[in-house]
Length: 381
Image (cartoon, rainbow, N blue to C red; front, side, top):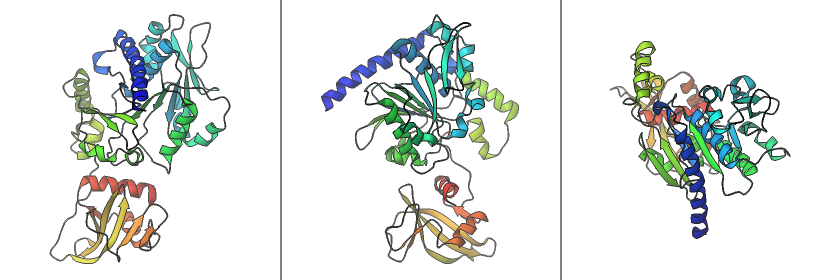
């Protein structure tokens, strides 16, 4: 099996290198240049703050793959509302403006959207090509399984995949992937995210959670899942020293020079994985612990929910990671069907905890804990 995989990756790498060489010929301006690197991997996961031209460069990768290998592309978003005509029709505006189409396809001069086909085609003044890029969304995954007209796609671009995570979204994406890839070895998958939330459930679903805390800005690491699938994970670095960074600095001075720590998600100044700003636990001399047996199991981590009362804050909840042994009398909040007698589904028996979240009477040990709990509350409150 290893010998067969090695041979397959050798062929895949030749294809990826062929696309990269064509990309280099286009002379994309340095401040916007980023050719997706799928050498030695089946998936590229590229995560950054916003405005890094990941989407445009990935579309260009697919366009080159069409010109050189006649590969079609699937462009995927999570929800149906994200792929409406109004939101999708301008997807290739930058590529058209830069006239890359003429360089790759002498007979055509632009890409246009055919809304009735949910696809993009190449065009000139008198003719149009067959579709080469198809628009899909994970929300409609079940419809695609029974469709008789879906294309074979070699390039997959899942844009902004980290976001509102609905149950089994990863599995539904994999279902679409399986349907369109059709047992071929030359399928290249690019997954893009503008959210730098290291606590995303996606990382659990993909089996790469253990690697995430070790990845720093600027890293491009090859990861292997437990069952052997190879993923390149690229966490974009800061742009401060680049030409793009100088532009961003000017824009930040013009419009976004405000002191709130939360502005880092807008300005791109954060030096680490994105984290929110949360009320941190404070301890007072008159603190009285009311109850400390509640735990939450989420993202492969236990968190303790301690009910505390004091004169300044009243009844409130302190949340922090819990790494000790779970006791028989602990109450464990879970997000799936309970399998143990001390487990409870979400807040079924703990409505008073739910009320504290609504009243914003919850405090956290650190920002990373806040990120996890924020995600849990967002999808389960």
